[in-house]
Image (cartoon, rainbow, N blue to C red; front, side, top):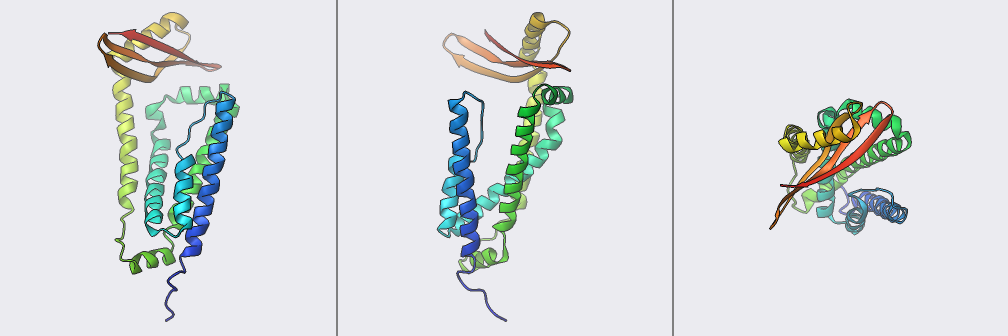
Length: 226
């Protein structure tokens, strides 16, 4: 039986690295364009993808293991996040956003699917037999990918529980009450963010209440000192 060449895994690592570098640079470019045009844009890829890609191009098995671990974590978290969305944000609000902002919603959906596809590809590509064999020859421990997958799901469960606690809090009830005084009963209300900042003069409560109906979505900031 022919044994695998010691460097057989390098082309796979370098290809994955080049893909990550290109993705990271494109993400950085999009972020710069968004900032220049004062458009909201957020992503966790950018510079991290570039750095990880450079290490993969250099043939780092450790980087391959870390990237694959993160890919499994993110795939699990994104999948669980889709299932948990109705528990974090009312379905009515989700549909109202899609209806009132179809272009932005389509872009967000496309970005989500692209990132998910990339993470699935990385998880499979960096677990290729030749890479696993190279890790074994190097004496590196085998990682159980059920751990990052479980952590991704646990993270989403924690977000769901936190969101439920926020919506039931007295501060959320006050924020919704103040927003309803401004817009009336023709809207539904949801606390999108709630933050506390303590200082020498007391605690400042601030955040955003999202008001929606079938044809409109409005974000209403709130702030008070306790």
